[in-house]
Image 1 (tube, chains in turn yellow, red):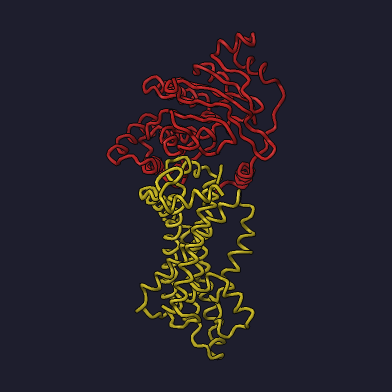
Image 2 (cartoon, chains in turn cyan, green):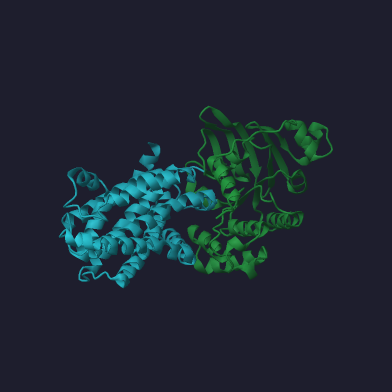
Amino acid sequence: MKRLAELIACVLIGKCEGGDKFNMNAIYILWLRELKRYFRSRSRMIGSLGQPLLFLIALGFGLGPVFQRAGQGNYFQFLAPGVISMSILFMSIFAGIQVIWDRQFGFLKETLVAPVSRLSIMLGKTLGGATIAVIQGIFVFILALIVGFRPDLNLLPLALLFMIMIAVFFTAVGITIASLLEDMNGFQVIMNFIVQPLFFLSGALFPLNSAPAFLKIITSFDPLTYGVDGLRACLAKTNQYPVTLDLIILLVLIGVIMTIGSYFFSRIEI
Amino acid sequence: MENDYSIDVENLVKKFDNFTAVDNISFKVKKGEIFAFLGPNGAGKSTTIKMLTTLLSPTSGKLIINGNDAVSQQEKTRESFGIVFQDPSLDDELTAYENMQFHAVLYSIKKELWKKRIEELLRFVELWERKDHLVKTFSGGMKRRLEIARGLLHHPKIFFLDEPTSGLDPQTRNHIWSYIRDLSKKEGITIFFTTHYMEEAQESADRIAIMDHGKIVSTGTVEQLLQQTKQTSLEQAFLSLTGNAIRDEEASGIDRLRTHRQMRGGR
């Protein structure tokens, strides 16, 4: 409770343990570090394009004719925004979970003894992770264009905003999970019980309008649903919910997760 | 006379659930002193260092670092010390220079200043030629030297070194100790270190504290400890104060994971 009070004091009146509320230089250097690490590991960049490509080709072309016959239109157009969201989801969660590696390889200690508030560290890491996830999403977008995706480009800025929101939200989720775990033993559990369900139950792969009621209810609890829906509305002109609703829900969720995440991150003791 | 001391610890206690890791210890370290903090594994040394460096909050007690309260004045405390941790804390995927730059920005050092200082320090630890190499290509000794340079970048008044020479060959150890003594002499920085090599403490330390089972069992100069225990070497004095029993230290989850990763061939 003391930590929570400190955190609230930090956000509201700017009196933070460890340093200024927003140390812009610190946020910048943490962000830059994530980017440098990302661009240096080519294998990670290229490797994480494999799965989206597989989904686009196998599902996009494989299920396309069935989808068409069912009167739902062009499946590839429908699927591409879902696959872009998927790649952002995976990349963000991984970027967030990097905190566990930082902890394990000791680098986290270097940041935690510095005269910088935990909130600044959390923000720098979130923005860094979200940036690489968005870059990854753009790569998948380009890949989809090459394979045959023909999106509406009028709302591209709004589509980018949805990509950013998905990325920020799930990076913060990753950091929150990492703050709660001491080591990577729980990693498989997280993949199977959090990340995969988030993806498969989001409506990224199937249209929600024809889904059974129970599935619709489940998907409505999945934050990614609103990201996919918003992105699909912008790029493929089909959506389940009003775009404004998608936008508001995501913004609220980001606020909530940032608060929870900062709280748990500020509690990390090494 | 508060200002004569770099570190002033009184009745410091740290409890984890039912286990008391640090049991009511008090000690003072004078400005400019080289102070060795010795003890068998699991004695509570690392827990004490974590509290001194604001990484862990004490259960009770007073902790004054450079005149700042380490609990209520974390920011000022953090600015005033440098640290080399027991385990490596560099980013392997960044270059030596980038690791230094990262530190400089986190400590809000002005750009004109850090540019100059990074060069000075990297030359001092003889890594300037390798500044643009990724840290993952460095040997253990080079990493340690880089960590020492990094810890000094913001001109700390106290330098904490938690087993700075563990796992290094005698050449590198001598090298590192000559840096440290040099620093203390030239800059007047207070050095607070732990080690399992008794000869390092005997050679370099002005004063020594020996900790066991969470308590400080003896403090003094090498001569005083030898006199007190009627022994001829610090190692014998250490053993006579702490006994011959081998200590069990429970590994934390992180340590276990680290071992696990090493077995699988690392990253």
